[in-house]
Image 1 (cartoon, rainbow, N blue to C red):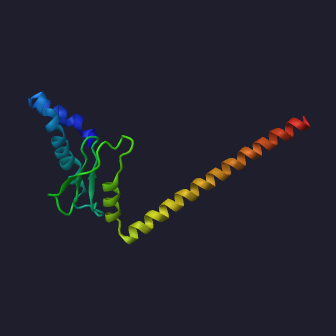
Image 2 (spheres, helix red, strand yellow; image 1 turned 180 degrees about the vertical axis):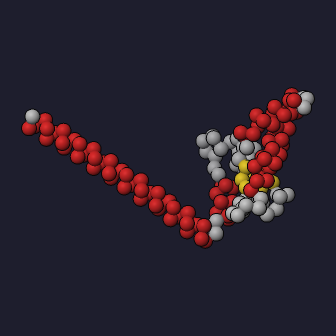
Image 3 (tube, rainbow, N blue to C red; image 1 turned 120 degrees about the vertical axis):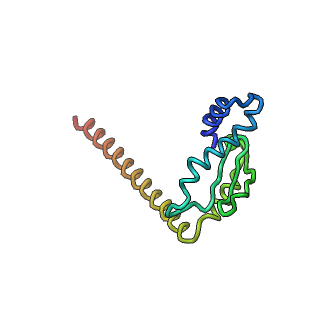
Length: 140
């Protein structure tokens, strides 16, 4: 959401909103821009999101797409030490059904295996090149 703050700020300044009201109005306008430009595109798609979590550095909003009237504050200042993302984790776990969770776990396992195989190959290549270099040094 913070990425839309600049756009919201510019729109409000162009409309002549007093500077002292901008702090209050920018998050509201940024949310409206998000809903109009981005969230609207997700309605009617084959795999519509079950939940949308909007994180803000100052006041994140969590909205349940099954009830558009629910907006609750989530954890704030996610970039600061000691903060958590409990609401994000909760909404993510609620959005995952059994099949999606199974595919998610399989994807993680596959990526982990690919990463480990690449590491082993790289270590083998380094060891082999070191052995070749060492052999050449002793025979040369």
